[in-house]
Image (cartoon, rainbow, N blue to C red; front, side, top):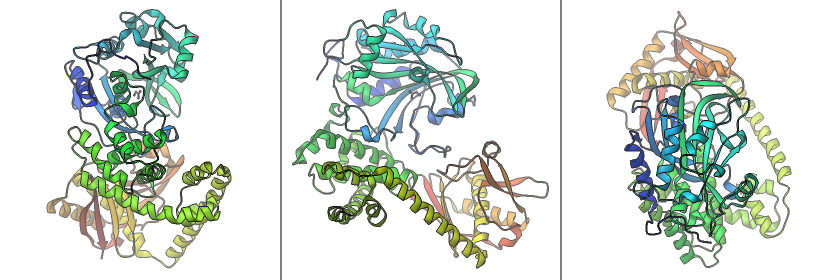
Length: 591
Ligand code: GLY
């Protein structure tokens, strides 16, 4: 299905032009252009990825002043994997760029709405979309906030009132999660039917939306409220605007396509699949195209495949892409060889995309997975059960389910998860047992290294800046290892300053105390958390502090630790090196 999305068919922009137009439009209206933040949030271990343009701006929406002023605009890289199983339809994606503009206590509803409308419809400065295809929703009101008549009044200047619909909080209240800034929103939908829907009653509007005849293209959130544990607790000190519009969707509208994979963002990659595949199907092709692009951006931001957190998501994306590439009968290493098409498209926008690194990381994982697949597939054919396939052969349950579906077999997925849970519980107990054993054998040195690890992180923050946080750690009998975010090599002076600081704290013989406290409180006092870890409501925090109780280090930690830093001996940095883009590693010893 094609539709004529434009009021003037001559104007066909490519995605790079659309992104640039958006940034220019708001820059001209006093907004500072921010570069996209990394996909991996810097200071928020509660989420794996940035999932909205506003995420890196949360502190500023909460009231902190932004160094670049109170009008901001960006195209932010986002990853959302919640709907990964829907990828393959016309518009679900795991990676997207979110175009957004922000007012931090500056302009509010009237200007936000005016500029959204102007950008969408202006041929000179915006996208030239057809205003008669726009449908608007606004918040209908509830106990938290009134019906948004202010938004309606603004919209009425541009859109006939009968195309403005009131909807409840479920649709028109936006927040990034259970905690943080939030508020009522107004959403813009575009009619993608060939002939146009014309006037719709409320019910007809809802039905058209359900059918997919209307596509949401922009959301203006009036961020004036705050949520805590899922409940709106009151107003923020300032009235903010937070908008979000997916570049991929908007490109689809502008280019008059009925699915994102036909836009210039995906077309070269999709053509490459079509050319190379000897058993083509659209769904598999879209999954490969989507996952390859997400993998490229994740690797560009320093993520490498692993079994944990961001690394696990990356691994899963590459492995799912490889599975679909097999369905399509694409040559081996198709993803790593073809990802170049994407790098070409984006390299002028995102300078951190290094094609050599990206292809290498993907091809290593493709090769690894190829081996796993070969042994796993053989076992599957033999009738080996899902649990053994997963635990012995590293064969993911998703893939077992997909294979079983192809063979019209049933897999007891719930039973599988129960078995896995029991298995993980048993390994956890085993690990605890081992740990206790280790301590009974007085692995005194590992306990000391553990305390030194806390001092080292505190010293790094003191010397390099408070934005340094731990990204990983590992302690053996020989040495400690810490990975932390920092985007360049440390100088010799910095290394010496860190070493001296740790030794100074050791000499001062500070005491090490463990305190249990509510997680909220620990967060409030700024205790360091382990990257990517979810904590229970009550946590244990280790303080290293002087006689007056001034803490040099506070960390969420289960211990154990030495009681006094004077027990540690002499601290020495052995090595400082890069592990990934923006992540450094230090190995250090005590003697
Ligand atoms: N922050 C607005 C949105 O994601 O829709």
